[in-house]
Amino acid sequence: MAANEQHYVLPTPKMEKPTKVLIVVSPYYKDIADNMVAGAKAEIDAAGATWDLIEVPGALEIPTAVGIAERTSNFDGYVALGCVIRGETTHYETVCNDSSRALQLLGLQGLCIGNAILTVENRKQAEVRADPKDQNKGAGAAAAALHLIALSRKWQQSGSVGFKSSDEYQIAASDIGKGTPTA
Image (cartoon, rainbow, N blue to C red; front, side, top):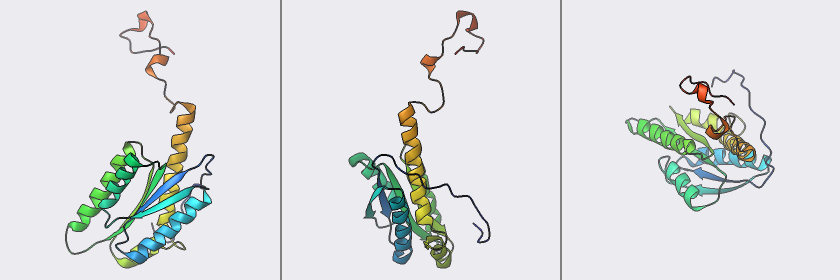
């Protein structure tokens, strides 16, 4: 994001029922991680939710920790925080791509995850993105998780995601083969 660009930020959702979020952070770059955690905690607190925090060694371990927590605990959503700064080897691409892909796959399975594993060229870029007074990516990831939790709850309550189920359609005998179901 360019520093002079403006963008729209959705308002923080207010949770109507208790909400518990797990913040999973890799403190490899401790100062950067601490800033992102501060932003995430503030955003979760502002929504009236609660949070727990765990640390893992690196960005590649974040998706595994989220998966373990989902199977063995009772969290409503997850915030993934870490930082990968480009180095001299291709390890950067592996860590960036694989951690992101694993989190995306967990999300596609229905987990509510906000991802702020920063992938940057240098420390200065990371500092700006992690700073709660600047780009505040930790808060952005927490907000993303909260929005996904709210969306998931909305659809669970209504029992519908906007599509008709197959048993809501009745196909008239004269319409068979025409591809035009009648509601």
